[in-house]
Amino acid sequence: MSLSTAACLDIHFAYPPRVDRTLRYQRYYLAGLERVARVRFGHEPLALKIASSADAKIELESRLQPVLTRLRRSQTSAHVGQYVASFGNGDRTVRFAIDAHDARKVRSPELLEASDLYFKANRWPEDELDAKVVPLVNGNGMLRARDLAYLRSLRGREKDLDLVFISRIWGGREHNLRLFEQLAKLPLRTELHAIFPVGTPAGEVAAGMRRLERLRVRVGTEDLPARELWDMLARAKLVFLRAGKHLCVPWRMIDLLCMGACIVADSRFGPEWPEPLRPGTHYLDCGLDRPADTSPAPSEQYERVGDTVMTAFATPERLTEMRHASGRYFDEHASPGRVGVYIADRVRALLDA
Image 1 (cartoon, helix red, strand yellow):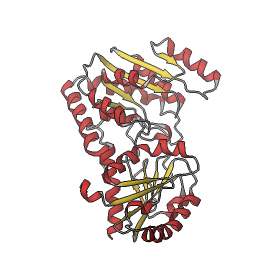
Image 2 (cartoon, rainbow, N blue to C red):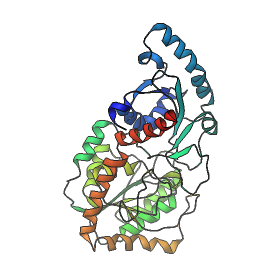
Image 3 (tube, helix red, strand yellow):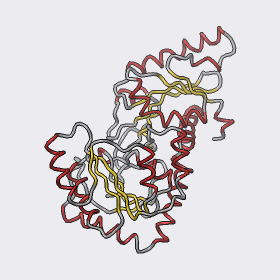
């Protein structure tokens, strides 16, 4: 879809009851849609720019209002955004939802029922779901345009560290602790930083900190400032990344692809984006077999972590190739603009049917 063609597309984003939380999860997609369509927010009349007279605006709005009302009534999750797309004079509309929840299940069956198209950011290809459910990049809703510009600027950063792993201890606490323990053994220049987030039981925080501090792992309870985090990650020849909560592709994957990092993951990612992230091309895979409940993999498998990392350093030219592949993937498939084109293309296909 060209920008000139897409400019004829109007999209209404219906504000849900929990506006702030939903906007955080929808921001990445809204940023992309705004580049390829005319987006309306909240209670702005959808007909504002697609009807030429007051009478036509009233008539068009009256036709669309039942659609918007049904969508608002069916809203059940702050992680799911609801939209109505129209084209031309507004006679044709497509109701669609964007589900940005980490879990693999459809977060809002009600919105799925009410929609013509349902984008799922963490869709597992083997799951048998309604045909309306299509995959989507898991966009990092904390990033703004200036952040993405800064991340891109880090692609040529000098690599003075071998490996960096900065991670919250959640989504499987024991698994995370074991990863840090394995990485701390390696004879490399590393930066290892474990963060115990708010809400972690005090006893587990104390025990976890004792377990890691003796291994040269920095521990804390607060996230690093974004620029400090990104600068540290950009210095690494290898950036270690664990699967997110519910074994999803975590938000940080967007950051790392944008900066052109060479990524090594604890396991192959289960969710699949529209253009699949391929192990060996876009990231290295340690091959840990984690249960769906996010408990640890079999203990003997954790030796694979060190083996995968050390093997990677045997072919430095391959690491360079993977950094270039990460940046290309972001530019071609995962940037807000490209995600916006993908969503708009799927919507237009239904409008044109």
